[in-house]
Image 1 (cartoon, rainbow, N blue to C red):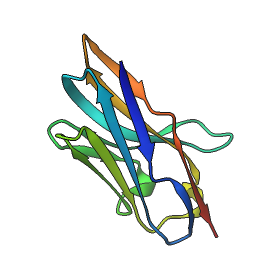
Image 2 (cartoon, rainbow, N blue to C red; image 1 turned 30 degrees about the vertical axis):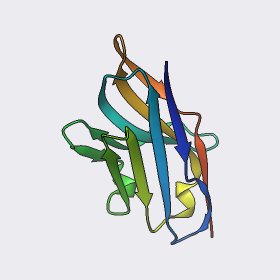
Image 3 (cartoon, helix red, strand yellow; image 1 turned 90 degrees about the vertical axis):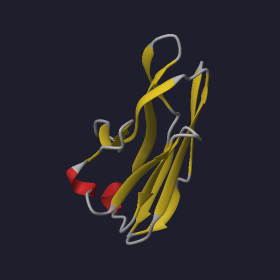
Length: 118
């Protein structure tokens, strides 16, 4: 069984910063990618940032230049540094991972709330 545990969400003023963390645990023998998705009320869940095993990254256009995703492979932990936060970044942020135990599968964390006030 794989668990993803997120931390670091909270309330911040516009222009501020937050750092999200997500640690994967369980009988993991490989991780292909880890990433962060978000879902605001009344909107679809969207991919914010993803990092793959080789270190390549992808970002949602609206966060490019403001958010940085990184990963500590040894700790099986992914981070999302969010700077210059905007009110429209307010959402529940979910960690996701494609990991191998007995087969490759996608896993999700329970989510952490990020609220940006004006």
